[in-house]
Length: 228
Image (cartoon, rainbow, N blue to C red; front, side, top):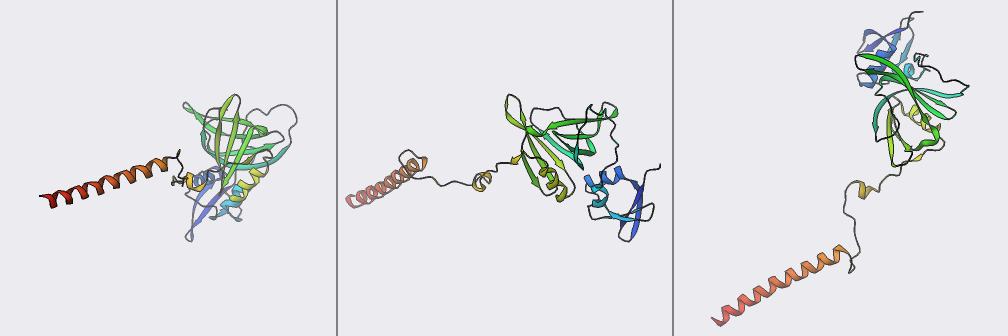
């Protein structure tokens, strides 16, 4: 069965055709927005949001793990960033499939290895996802590293805010990321009490001594003028 292709409506004209993978890639690169209208080969119209929001076809063929696993949600995404030591995660390019199962978040996609493309998947244990944060259509996850104090951060693009919130809703053990206070995050000065042990106390004394020295010099100059 031939894969469905789509034309994109741009300023009253159509361009294309493009397959689903190409359209998703254009959305990742922000060449298209979620609101752009597509026309399928059957004449049906839909938006890029509708196309990406559909359950992706089973296009990733990495070996399925043995045993029975309940799929709770399947979402289209793209990998934005991985920061910190921990689980090895391929540098997936283009669209990835984020599948929430009973105990894991499975991310599958394509990446380049030397001169050829490979398909693979990685599984994140749900119990190891400590924090999660939604920023528009993006989701940031912080994973626990065994024996390491630093958490590993993974950033995903879910294309819509609704999909981003849906993914986080399936992470029962993840808590909101502890944000810094606005003053500290912005690098603003924080008021400190003026006590004997505080830096402000020492700074105040320096200012007082400086003013006293200036006043003493002025008085000395006036006295000398009167004498001579």
